[in-house]
Length: 111
Image (tube, rainbow, N blue to C red):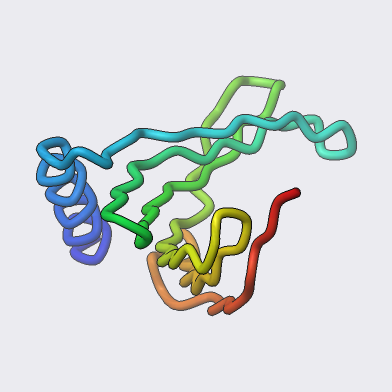
């Protein structure tokens, strides 16, 4: 419980502090999975400064039967724009106990 409270406090501090920045946005994504009959929900703030961005996300699912939310984890992603259509990133994924789950390093591109 202490970890959840600490993570929530840190998340809200980032959220409140970033509200004063010019490059602050709140983003979200909702997708429906036909096989699991559930919605996957991801929401959180993004702070952009020049060619650097930081994204914090909370992840959850919602079953269509009963409409119950289930917190599934969180992530923190650092992004550096290398050009107008190429980004390098590192993404830390945490499980529902906010413990280390996975670390991804990669590039993202657009045409």
